[in-house]
Image 1 (cartoon, rainbow, N blue to C red):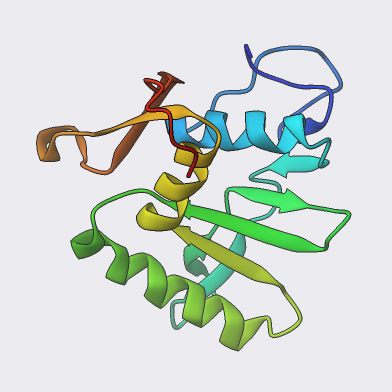
Image 2: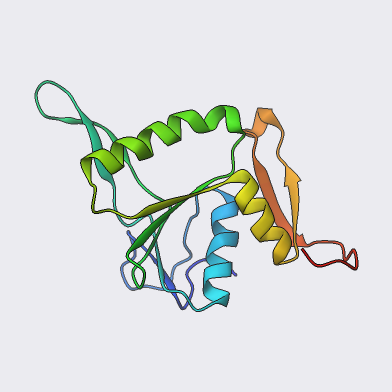
Length: 147
């Protein structure tokens, strides 16, 4: 897959068929899985303000990775090490407090690893110096067992 798909769009999309720029390789893989199942998705379509200064200016916002319009569901992938997840969990909790009607699901590293293994995608740990987390690549080596 090289960017925009038949099923997905970017918030910045102008209707042109330019490739999407994903923030992390795991997001590209997630988009491919969604496409495989013909699930419509939008990439980072909405930023939710979650913190304001004393003048009412937004000083922090949260932008979930995907929106699945047919399910009215936002998806956030968190493939970084668990030590770094606390900050993101705090943002999602704040989003739920401020926007209780917004449905959001976080996929943690272990959830995403299982999903990739089920699809036969090779999974490797990224070095901490590169931000840590998971790196998804080509097909996994066949072990004879199915997850």
